[in-house]
Length: 114
Length: 109
Image (cartoon, rainbow over all chains, first blue to last red; front, side, top):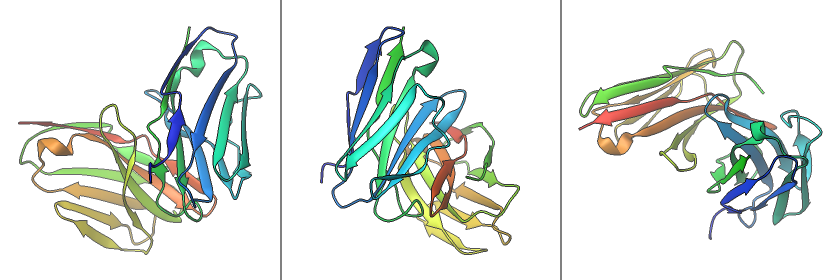
């Protein structure tokens, strides 16, 4: 298996633009997580899906952020409009079972908003 | 999820020295997971502890879960340069996987 696949690996965008990050979890995994990592705040859980249903979205910063999981093999995280403070590395992770099983992380998307 | 505090934030050791990072919570944790992230990389799962007082070993790494399930530790014996990275603990329940801020380990040869 190729592992969790995220795209793009790097994204540079101007403030105000829409940004879409993509994630393909490991086949057969039914839990998917989106995290944001910065030096100041560490690894923050944004949203957790189980069987394509959002279970915990309390970490989503504000209305500018939205996440979808239309099927078991694909998820998106959208930021509209983007702001410089959204600059971070965004990780997607998946696991087989609930959040209490081993999570496999993708390589991450480094987002820079200028 | 629970807020987990990790100490120290950063540690620099000489190769061969031991290293310990601690994870603490003010409330009872469901389970605890440990991850390692190499510089420029992504977090990689090391282990999960479930039972009160549990101790698990992986070669030079020893993981411990406190009796009250409010703290955990990771101890590395005789560090090597390959141990460099940030070590995270995470509170893992059925509906949450919440990370501490991590301890960055630097090892000088």
